[in-house]
Length: 129
Image (cartoon, rainbow, N blue to C red; front, top):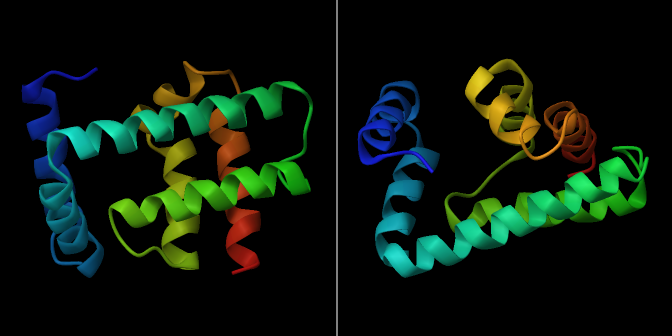
């Protein structure tokens, strides 16, 4: 887990990139409302879902498979704990999982190839919503 200094750095970076957006404002408000325990629970659920997706990927599933899409739908819905996503934002997030080395590293330490699998599944999912 990142230390407080790293979290503050990432928060400031996010504020500079997206602070003007409605999604950023929603995220700040929702995180504040959920409190530390609520945030901890949301992050734990997110970690479990990521592990489920990784296991599915390791089993040879295609990112476009119904099984993968079912889990990606849960991932999309889980974002609502922070903000109201839309297809364009979701595609962008998926692309960040591959293009931003920090995101990519987080997924790759769960399972090699997971960042790309997530991106491919998310981009496909975004076309259906």
